[in-house]
Image (cartoon, rainbow, N blue to C red; front, side, top):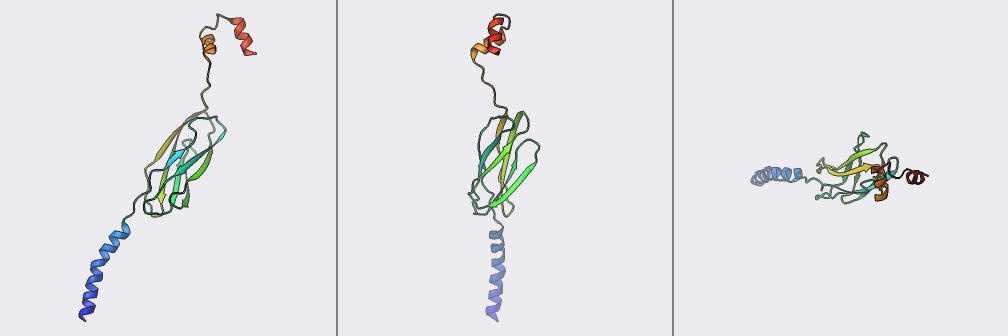
Length: 147
């Protein structure tokens, strides 16, 4: 009978320790986002997204492309798996891609961000800029450049 009482006391003492250990769950690392930061409207671009969960839990990625398409969550994937996602922006503007990682126990990382501008800025050579700033100086040359 003493053994049963001692065993019962030991179990009661261990239950809080087991519960405390079971509830510890670290969030995944803030994801990295790799891809172009400027481009052309209507063109599809690829972005690589990576995160690691310190507990080795599987990870889902939630992505907001910043263009009112809404947040999309995909996964789960094994911890440390990098994924590649594609996106096309429908109109000119500057967009902020946001990505967070969430493990299978619900712990979430901080948001990672990458700013993307569409369309890519046009490079103007200095001579064209000079003509734009002085439209009446060389009207014949200006007409020839437009051909």
